[in-house]
Length: 375
Figure 1 (spheres, helix red, strand yellow):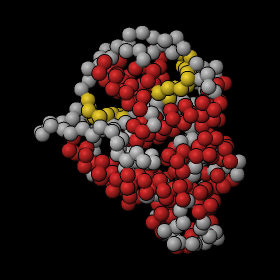
Figure 2: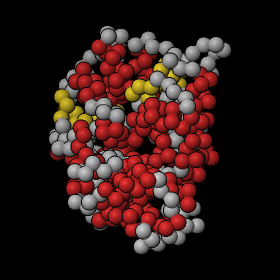
Figure 3: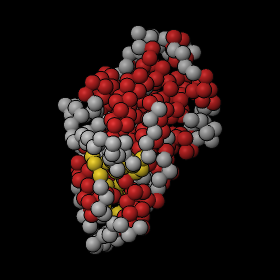
Figure 4: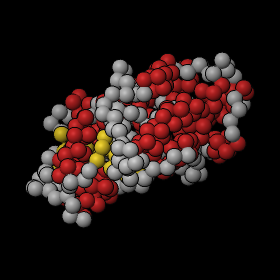
């Protein structure tokens, strides 16, 4: 096992990003883990300073120290406010990859999550790759393939049912690949070789099914399918988030709502869907089409606050993730909304669980669930 940072061999590009941080501290205002923990080593600046100290051999590696790096949610909120435009997420992901490759003493829950994802195909204990696995007829394409991702399949099945109901209402033929994980959390936690192996298995399935479109409610899965699957496996697919697909169906008159509801909804922008993929308006338009008045929380769109569940942190750092989710629910309560809506299964799970503890009267729903009630 590596015990000193001098043993770490990091590529030049992430090293340059680590050293470009001039320690101004603007990230303190945006970092969700810093807000929750209140300690300098839990924010972007502190993590980059620690990485620099490790690379220079000034600090010895230990699981408790490495918690600071593996607890980063990769939400990219720090990058929005960084005057030096440091690519913090890329730098920390590369640093974690180097730590893993070096045999550094990983935090126990992180190592266990990686083992489960690789051996069982799911991050959820005991889940395995459960669910329906479609088979494409010989010589035919699968048409629309719904890829819910592991969190929707295992923890928020209501989202999957809502998508199916909406596609059936619009008479869109589809098949469902349920239960599988896209492996992007594995990659962003630093397990490059393991993530590649997992993505190659997924790529093999997609090549056999040959879907015309892969439809997913999970922003992380969408990022995996559009950015990382081609990079790691050479397999390219056309993929789309459910919010933009459903908006198009509504605009083209292929999907009609039987009624509208007059409620107030606070909309939570998922970090990956918004900051990383640039999708802000489609979920809001769906809520508006459903008749809801959309209320904005103080932190929204590019500056939206993280739900706390990024990188499956509810499995690796549950206490931290819970604290962050509860703060976000409190922000939603301040808007006096009837419903807290989002467009990500992980965000939905985070906010719904937090609402049970701090805001029981507040309904929490995915935009697909809202629409499915109205067709």
